[in-house]
Length: 96
Picture 1 (cartoon, rainbow, N blue to C red):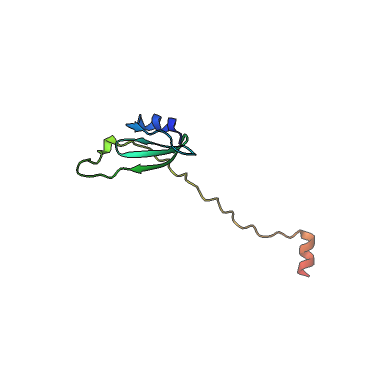
Picture 2 (tube, rainbow, N blue to C red):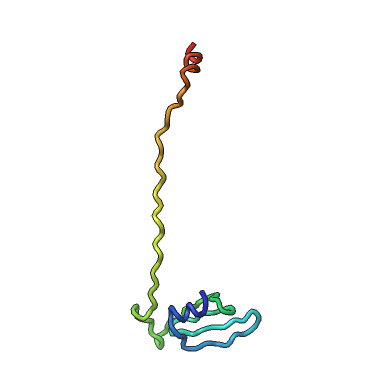
């Protein structure tokens, strides 16, 4: 995911760090998690630990994402076996 996509989906972060090193690594701080970037791409996200001083977020405060349902795959129909047909000329030879 790009940094633009993260900001569009989850909003502006509380704090952004400047990129450090090669490749450049930076992070964005959100209330309950941090997102780490290499250049402009997400490489990891980490939930912050909860304590008595920092209450866990209410369900309505967490971003909601919809999972894509798995496709339903129907089994292929099984054809009934067709008995082998012997041409008439060969059938008379086979029965002799």
